[in-house]
Length: 259
Image (cartoon, rainbow, N blue to C red; front, side):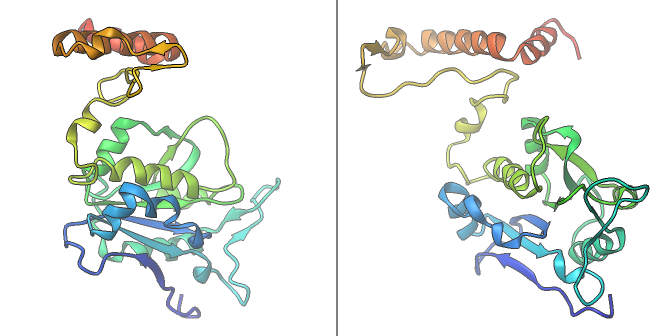
């Protein structure tokens, strides 16, 4: 990397952030996409307050040659381009210089459609770490040797393909940040929502009590918390059974004493 000027991190931080703030490090060819929606609402407020930190590193300065090339044609032929191993390694070494090498403390993640599906349990795992580094792919993907060499965890938002990993990275960061202490302000908000107990969340209602001929269930207006809890549990089970048979089957198995 001696031929290249030292790449600069594009960092959005609060000047008085606490040293223990959770950190999201992002490597991307589209640094201008960040913080994006992460800078708004509760995640944006928490960012301003220093409850978490966003470090965005532009991959382009690590490119080779006069044009700072970051990709090349696939070995063996085929469509598209692949991000080069040497370029990615230089970027990963630069970003990882000040973070733990223990992946349990600091996961290193590549957003990839072939990765394990991202879920609430993964969000909770990431939130419990000191931080996470997210590699955003482009084109056809990244050189496989980099994934092997650095022990990179592949994570997918679902069974579909996007033009890059930036939107997926924002989703992962948002899901983790909102679980950090003090971000939502109400711990019950994360305890009662979808997936927290293996079920989809129950329906919600608010004023007005009647809207276009539709009324709020009487039980919710009764003030009887025991009955309200029963209704919400029953509705959560009904919705999960109807919409996510896979989650319902896992829920039933767990109640039977399965793994």
